[in-house]
Each structure stands twice: as structure tokens, then as C-alpha cells.
Image 1 (cartoon, rainbow, N blue to C red):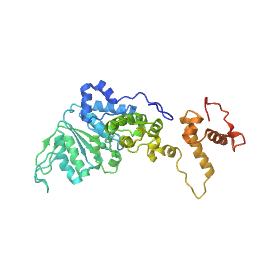
Image 2 (cartoon, protein in one colour):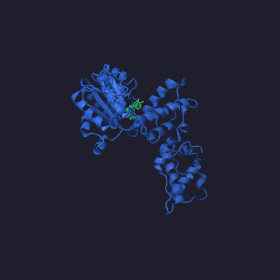
Image 3 (cartoon, rainbow, N blue to C red):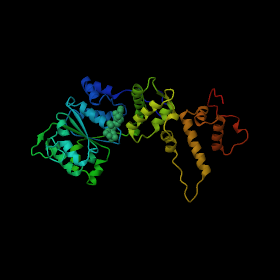
Image 4 (cartoon, protein in one colour):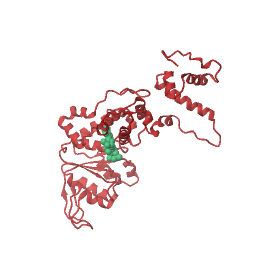
Amino acid sequence: MRIVGPVHRPAPAILLMASFESSAGKNAAENAAASTKGTPLIGQHALLRQILTIAERVARTDASVLIGGESGTGKELIARQVHAFSRRANAPFIPVNCGAIPAELLESELFGHEKGSFTGAIASRQGMFQLADSGTIFLDEIAEMRLDLQAKLLRVLQEHEIRPVGADRTVRVDFRVVAATNKDLKQLVEKNLFREDLYYRLAVIPVHMPALRERRSDVPLLVQHFLAEHNRRHSETPVTIAEDAMVYLWEYDWPGNVRELENLIERMVILADENRIRLADLPPYVRSFISEKKHPKPILTDDGFDLQQAVEDFEMGLIDEALRRTGGNKQQAARLLGLKRTTLVAKLRRVREGPPTAGDLDGDDDGEMQGETA
Ligand SMILES: Nc1ncnc2c1ncn2[C@@H]1O[C@H](COP(=O)(O)OP(=O)(O)OP(=O)(O)O)[C@@H](O)[C@H]1O
Ligand SMILES: [Mg+2]
């Protein structure tokens, strides 16, 4: 894949799984594949490599890991990597979504309960901590946990003993905890919405997953990876992607990060015409993103507005962009903009020299292009 335009050309695609194999040994890589349910971690950006190095190092210990970062950045994937590279890899990895379980049920979900301890507790039941014995418990969306339960969790992390709801005994459990949140936990601590002592207990090793827009150079790798994956699932003839469409995917800011990218590629594969994803197939919010980013919406104030100037600025912005992307080739730039080459040249000249004079449209004296036909 050749990337054109404003992007740097990415180095040859590699999967980080491969580098893991060499550093952590084949068994570790196999375990990683199993515990990540066959989802390889794609990316070669330095920020991601750093995180993987930390994950690999921390995996040799039982230290708690707190993973932050926006939604869809791969927090759970990293948590699974930590587990997979640890001595606990053959024991369970137990994810608990603290935000999805009603607050009044979360305690019994985590620590279990005795028969009859509350209405509906018809039998005693083991909690997630006990299921994670010898393995890893992944406390996802930890910021959603209520303060009263935070106090109980802190005690469990300190003593490695749990007390099931309604029980008068404690049970020893051997676990490692990895927690994740997309909230700013430090800020919640300052607002007294999260216990400071629990924060420090969880964040022995803090890890921050970068947003996809902070590691754009991974976009082409991820696109190709998800194309291959969804081609396998949905399509008999492989769907490919046009270069200009890839440029727009690169430039887009991806508020939903890798998850948003994956969902979009899946949809594009299913809907693709003639097995090709073209620029025109991308959703309008992706296609309009580049121009909106560079040309924020003008505001009409009571002081008035120079419409003529704004239109010219807008035009020149797009012409500059087209020329930059085509390496200064006016023929190709004009085609990108849906203009005749002579029209583009006239616009450039008008901006440089003021209003056009007769004869301006006859040609171009720059002579920068060889073999142009228009
Ligand atoms: N580097 C990556 N390589 C391949 N797939 C990835 C990568 N990062 C994320 N994904 C995929 O994107 C999706 C979201 O990842 P994950 O669930 O780990 O994100 P998250 O940070 O936990 O999101 P949330 O905060 O919404 O729970 C998953 O399907 C995951 O497999
Ligand atoms: Mg998650």
C-alpha cells in the first residue's frame, strides 16, 4: 500500500506479536494469543511499543496495573496481554465491568454470597475474585464503583482475603488485579469521588493508552488488518481500499479510536461496490473532516463579514491542499478538485496578481509539469 499526500510513508507492516515472540519466548506468545482470544495487538508506534515493554515487565510481578485511556483504545487488550505473559497465564482471566453491574449487586458479584444473605440468594455463590484464584481479575470501569465498595475492595487488595456477602468467615485468594478506566481517576480523587488510598493501591504501575489520533501511523496497519479479518468473514472476493480513502482515514480524528475504525471497516467491507472502498464510500463525517479541520466554520457577527475574502480563503485552502497532495502537479490537483486545469491556474494567478487580464487563461508559464495534456 502506498500512502499519498500529507502522510509519511509507514515502514513495512509488522505485528507486535512478532516482536513479543522473540523477547518473551514462543510459549508466552502462544499464551498471549489464547488469552486475547486470537486478537493480535496491531501497531508499531513508539507509544504502543513502550506500553508493551511495560506490560511484559510488569507481567513478571504481581504488581497492580491501572490502565487509562479513551474508549476503544485497547485497554482490555493490554490487560489480557499482562495476564498472558504472567506466570498466571494458564489460570483464568476474569473481567468484571463495574459500570455495567447494578451497584447493589456488585459486592456479591465480586466477593460471592452465602445462601439466604439477601432476598433472592437461594444458594451460596462464588464471586469473581474466587473464580480468578491463581489468575487475574480485570476490574473494568473502576471509576463507577461506589465509595462504600471501594473501601471493601481496598481491604481485599491489602489482605488478599475476601468475605462473601452474609458470611462470617474470610477466604484467601491468590489474584493479580488489573483495573481500567476512561475517566481521569486523579481528578475524581481530588473531588473525593474516588478513594485516594485505593487509587495508589491500584496504580502501582499506571499505563496510559494513547488515542488513535496520537498514533496515526498505525492507521494503515489497522485498516489492512481489519480488512483482512472482515474479508475472511464476509466477502468471497477480497475488498481493497483506494489510496485517497486511506488518506482520509489517516487524517480523521477517531473519537471512538480502534473500535470505531474496526466497525467502520466491517461496514465498508459488507457494503463495498466492486470490492473496492472508494473515497465516496466513506461516511460524510469522515470525508468532510479534513476541510473542517483546516477551515473552521466562519461566524457571522454583528460587525459583518467579508464573504468574498472568506470564499477566496476557502478556495485557496483547498487548492493548496490539493497541490500539496499531488506534489505540485496542477493537472492532478485540478482533477482532485473537479476543475479544469486552466481554471485552477487562473485562480492561482488571480490570488497572486489580482484580477485576471485577457490571455491569462491561455496556459501556464510555470512549466513545472511534463506531459500535461489539458
Ligand atoms: N492495537 C490493536 N490491535 C488490534 N485490535 C485492537 C487494538 N486496540 C484495540 N483493538 C480492538 O478494538 C476494540 C476495542 O478494544 P478494547 O475493548 O480493548 O478497548 P477499551 O479501551 O477497553 O475500550 P472501552 O473503554 O470502550 O472499554 C476491540 O475489538 C479490540 O480487539
Ligand atoms: Mg474495555
